[in-house]
Image 1 (spheres, rainbow, N blue to C red):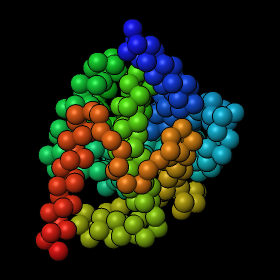
Image 2: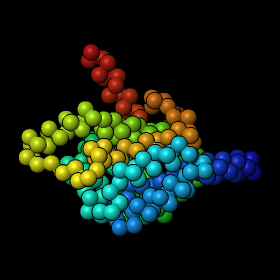
Image 3: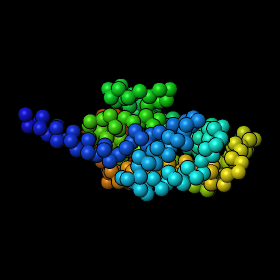
Image 4: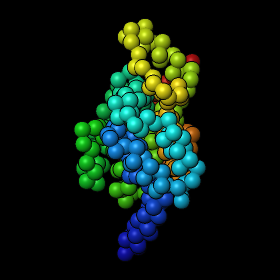
Length: 246
């Protein structure tokens, strides 16, 4: 009976936390643009305005740079940001681990969580950012939610935002020009900042997380979920090995 009571208290805490999150709503910012994408972004901004006015302001900046009248250009900007010759990727496991085997383990276990939560991932992988955000709103395990945010979502967002810095953009452009002899054209009639407009959406999401969680810089959170625990343990082993080697 006591365990049941504690479980109910935990579930109430999670529901309160999720009410502040709006993660399913925000996930729509990172879906591939279709004709109605600008309208959906405006609806997201309005949905966040009351609880997160500063976040809503960042989405307004995103909308100001978004070539809403040109579907093809919107799609090219999305592709430039997250797909072919991308600034970064929305597959957050790849952002953190690349092709390392730890990403494979992460995908396997995230798949299990998606299935258990009945969260349909469509044609994307289990670590695709919109899929993970929608998963948050379906989870009832407070510890798992905390770990997904602290060990996966927040660290990957920081790395992704860093890739939109002018220095990184210039470096990537030079590499693309050298190896592929081509670059995606910047949208005509828009400011050059348009090529990095998705930085505003990533920063908006990170700001929401910061409002809902006490974000940590280091991976110090006690682990309760096996697949995240194993990743942290492997990171610690690698760090110790590197320190001994030095």
